[in-house]
Image: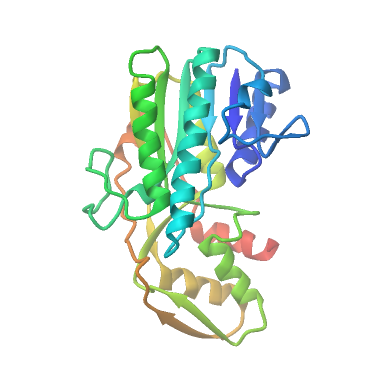
Amino acid sequence: MFFIFGSSGFIGKRLKERLIKQFGNNLVDYVGKKYKNKIVDLSKNNIFKELPIRPYNNVYILAAKSNFIFNNKKEERSQIHENIAIVKNIIEFCKICKVRRVFFISSSSVYSNKNSSPFHEKQKIKPNNSLGTSKYSSEKILKKAFHKLKTKVVILRVFTVYGNNMRKKQFLYQAIKKFKSNKKTLTFWNKDTLRNFVHLDDLTNILINLSRIETPKFTIYNIASNKSHKIETIIDHLQDLSGKQKKIIFKDSRNNLNHIVNTNKIKKKLNVSFKDLKKELIEIYEAF
C-alpha cells in the first residue's frame, strides 16, 4: 500500500497516476491541497482527523513549500518552519500507521558552495538558503524519529525536475516563455553555470522501482542525470528551436553554483537511465 503526501504538485500528480495505473486505486491513498474535497493543511497537527489510518508499506513525502527565497528573512523563516512542521506531522502519522518505509523528496539545495564537486551523499552539508536548510533539517529529523523503530527512511536529493507542465518558476519554463514571447532582447543569468536536469518520468521510475526492492535502514541517494549542462548551451538550443534570432544578454548573479553530481550510489542500486535533455526540450517547446 502507498500514501503520497503532496499529490497535487508537479511530481506528486505523475507519481499518483503511475502508482494507480500499476497497483490500482485501492492500494494508493494520497493528499494534496485537499483530501476528499476538504482543505488539508499538513503543517497543522490535526491532519490525523482527516486521513485514513492503514498499514502502508511506502509513504512518499513530497509536500513542501519549495520555492527559492532570497533577501526576505521573514519569508525564509516561514518556509523553514512550515516545511519542518509538515515533516513532523507526517512522522506522527507514519508512527500511528506503523509505516514500513518513508521516501523523503529532499533537494539539491542542501548543497552549497561549501561543497566540493562532484557532490556526493557523504559530504558535510551546510545549506546557504532557506529551502536547503528546511530540507536538510527534515532529513535529520526523519533519521532521528525512526532510529529505534522498524520504519526505514530513504532520502532522495533530487536535482531540477523538468517535463511538460513543469512549475512556472522553474528556469526551463521561464526560458521557453521568453523565447515564445515577442521580445527581441532576452536576459538570462550565469551563462557558464552548470545545471543538472532530471525528467519527471525518470524520477517517477526511480521512486516506484525503489519501492519494489529492499533498502537500508537509512540511506541517501543523489538523483541527477548523467550530464550537467551550461546555461548558455541550453539557451543556444532554445534559440535554435525558436527559429528566431533574438538578442541574448547574460548577467551574473549569486545563484551560480555548479551542479556536478556523483550518482554512483543510485546507479549501483538500480539500473537507471535518463532521457536526453535536448531531445525532450523539442517536445516540451512545441507543446508549450
